[in-house]
Image (cartoon, rainbow, N blue to C red):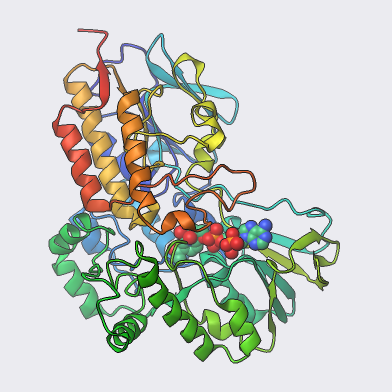
Length: 541
Ligand code: N01
């Protein structure tokens, strides 16, 4: 261990979560000579990819981008089988990573961090696991992801249903047999849209309960062949640089002009090509889709026309057409989503027009009728971005709880999405007000992890005991995030980005919209400027 263990801490760093974030944070700190412990609630590595085993679960970033890039060896040793990796394959990858770098020895599985408290007398964190045991650590680092606390709407009668209920985020490992069953899916976000076509193939009847229709674009998934994999691996350095210095963290080139500059015919041609290419090419066709309502409407119209072309029943097609600004809810990719509504065994129920009143013993009762079901699937999403952190009972200096600091979520404030005033020596990987979910996550995670590691090494080398974000720096960062968001269309749509999917959750927009490259530069400049915006304190020589 590099640091002198003056305060008799158990570890230099405790990390919460063994997903993409926690695994790399563990590896990085351990390689730098620190003692590290990871606590993970699941019985294995993987984070969201451990829990999200619902039918059709697949990544919506292309496999060649959705990787770690910190190790060329790792990149070369692993080959993806298709353009969009399935959940089992991503889980296999993360297990491969854990084995390759021998990470399991520092992870305690099946363990919940139930509280964490900063102890000002010894400048370290007291972390309680499973409500019983307390561990002392110099640094407290969260790698809990942005989408890990399920949203289960508290419908009246939810416990009375005689059939089976599942949430997509906590799917049984043994799977679910839909054969001959009447199934209801509530929710048409990415999880619903991925699972609906698969469930429809098996179930006797599938009823989809849709509150807000979504714009969905064919993913264009296909197998990867050996020669393609070889080519990608041989251009590893280029690809990594492109991703790290892009806005999105992928290799998909962004649009370079306004959608309104092209004639309607030219635009149609561009949209059509992007639709055929799949992935997020449509989202990246023009550079003003997220800031100009008229530009955005051109792509909305294009997708609505596609729905008309695909869906045979005109009434159903009408119900499936969204009206919000495309992209202001997270863009969804699918395989045969709209086509599924042409199957005789599939029906669509508009629960905005006729809301769900209650769950009965037999099924779902809307204000219009009762739907009898054997299985209900909740594809109702997450208390995103802040939900998991707020649940963890974190207390900083002067007994200030994170819940009170953020006033229950109405005044979320962080410095760079990485640290907070009153919470010294705590770091949040892909925390609120960082680029996180608006980018290709592994790339953003790597940038956070490396920045945190370098900061810890710097503190070590300069005998700094405590680093804490300054109030002013935090205020300015939050304001900067809000100012960027307010120039975009994102703030005009109800979504999990701004918390409006959760009853009673205060609205905000706790994300940095400036992109991976500019964020990387801001973070690097702050580090080069002796961690500007942090107060650094030493108590020993
Ligand atoms: O959750 P969502 P998700 N009554 O919040 C509806 C990532 N992800 O799990 O839109 C009726 O998007 C809700 O309706 P509305 C990805 O980032 C990635 O699908 O709020 N309906 C909505 O339709 C994604 O964006 C991948 O009106 C209710 C749905 O439930 C994020 O996770 C795969 C309701 C929830 O959609 C979340 O996706 C899966 C109620 N009371 C997920 N409450 C890939 O990588 C909610 N809804 C591909």
